[in-house]
Length: 226
Image (cartoon, rainbow, N blue to C red; front, side):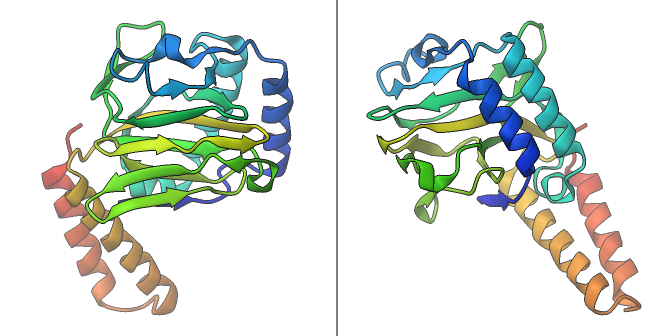
């Protein structure tokens, strides 16, 4: 399941991000790649301990804490601090899969990467190419979102970033350990929660709302790993 989370960052926050990243200390992204991904990865990346990355990452995490759609879709238990990458003309990231376990930079903590997230920071019209292509059970899906929008997709997915043909693509990316590790169960909960919220808006006094909420929370209670 791929889920778009619109407007995670507003215009002012995006301006702050792009200004800070313009003069950031970018390094070869292959330095952080696993041995299988090094030959596929061709981009620039900020170190996870870089002061700019830490400052902007904190801003994104605060925004996500207030985002009800993100909470409903991800059911987050742990969220890794966001990292940042930069793709210039000719750069790309070939097909790869994210590592199942990721360290939290500078700590001994490890998290399971149930969900991957890409937060687009550059306006889509400012660069050519650069689509995120995710392969799942329904085939390949290509995504290129507005600046400030984010896409969530299963960490188990093979994915790639198409070559940049002009301009520069800036993005934040990170991983989430969900309270519900199984993607199918998490999808069921998200769809049920979405339906309950729709019913609550359209028929706020409907007698089934309490019963449906009970079904949701009993499923979550049985499936959650906290």
